[in-house]
Length: 192
Image (tube, rainbow, N blue to C red; front, top):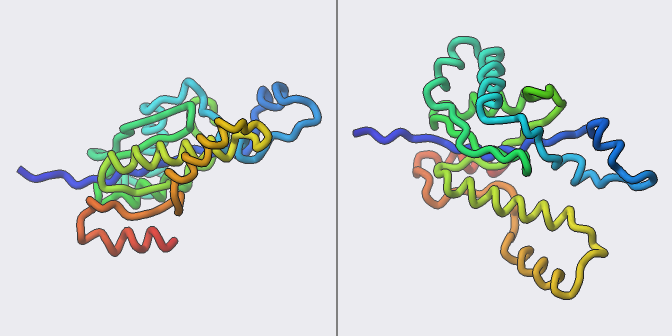
């Protein structure tokens, strides 16, 4: 029996613009921090089927029938969180770059057709490593969003522990359980 080799792409959906509803809810005279603006939750109507449909359309637009055929059997959304605007995409190892480039060219998502940027944060050989990175990045985002004046002595200790657990660098890194023949590809990814 042959094992299928896949890559898992951890992606963030960033929203560079505020919706009119968000502008109304903001307090007058207070500027919304850019971290909060970019890391808005996605629409509750966004689901994995809509995301896959949009991605397949973009792959077809960019690469035609060839690209659609190459990724059609292996393309799958394994995890989607509308609260954190994060998803994990599974694609065959041989064609993960097709999916990655299509994600980079996507500028809006169904059903709201809201302007967005999809950023691939990590490419991993196992879903476990991608999940761990998603948790670590969610914690790091919470630390950046939390106001500096809100820290109590108990909260400051907790925040310090989280910062120690997160370590550096926040983005990138190789999997210890990846295949050896992919080390060169992953080193190129880390360098960029």
